[in-house]
Image (cartoon, rainbow, N blue to C red; front, side):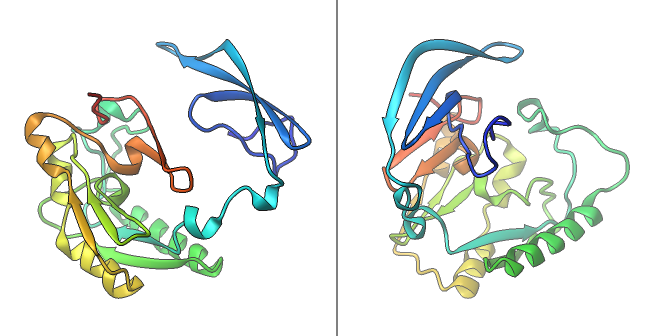
Length: 219
């Protein structure tokens, strides 16, 4: 999150850090733990990190993608199979699909206006896939040419894995798949890992940060 007591360009909070104090090229952090009803702060230990100058902290070409994928939803709406593990979701009256498609069109325009390359893939109307607008849960593309397919917790979300999506990205972005890592077979064992909905990937340090939930299996 952004600390309201710091200038707008001072951003922090990844994973378990909920308090920080910048001092030159150093940063003070406290860790947190999650309670049942709220996030609480626990001063388990203080960590002091030596940071390089801001312009040297991250190689954006390696950390960030050159293009993004947007899936235009055909049947966007409330999904009872995912609602229990998504507190942002609630039933709505009517059909919100038209509004979702309009928002996606505006988002696409804003991204392209900012110089971001955008791949647009079309959802299929059948079978119904109310969460098709969130492809990051079932697939990821990587700089070495790897594509990863992830095991999904909700049965009706597994239909989102479509070859047409992969082909759309290849044709619009020029991405060449050199290796396919298909983890979807773990669904038959009741083990799930929903892509970057479960993980935050640090490509520079080769570290994956996982969010504990029913959608993220732990050995």
